[in-house]
Amino acid sequence: MTSTERAQQAARDQLAELSAAYAEAESKLEAAREALNDGIVVVLKARMLGPSEVTRIVPYERQHVGRIAKAGGVPPLRERTVVSAKTATPGSPSA
Image (cartoon, rainbow, N blue to C red; front, side):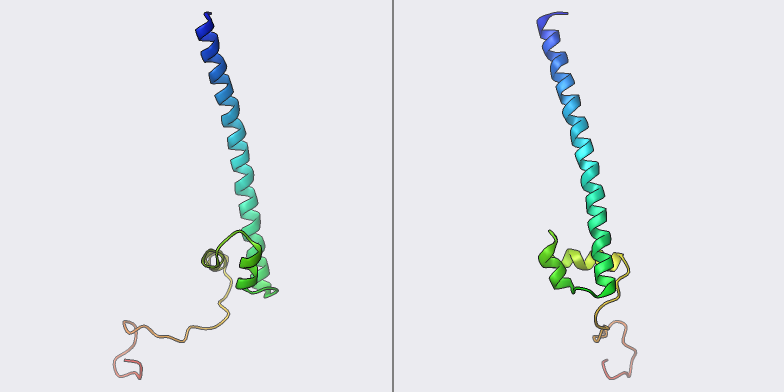
């Protein structure tokens, strides 16, 4: 094996090692993200904190916290009060 081949093999080995470390870190990140999302849903369902307070604590924006809550089945704080003109029936007060 020539010195060039040894250097190439060393480079391949180094990249394979770094790729494995990256994949491991990525899987840990995904597990941490899922745990955080589950925790957000638990807190919001129990109404211990509101979405704005949760947003101040977690590394997500308010809209993303809302998406997580919706996906986790957290009911809205208030019922919808606006009716879409597309779904309003003819003759109703909002049409």
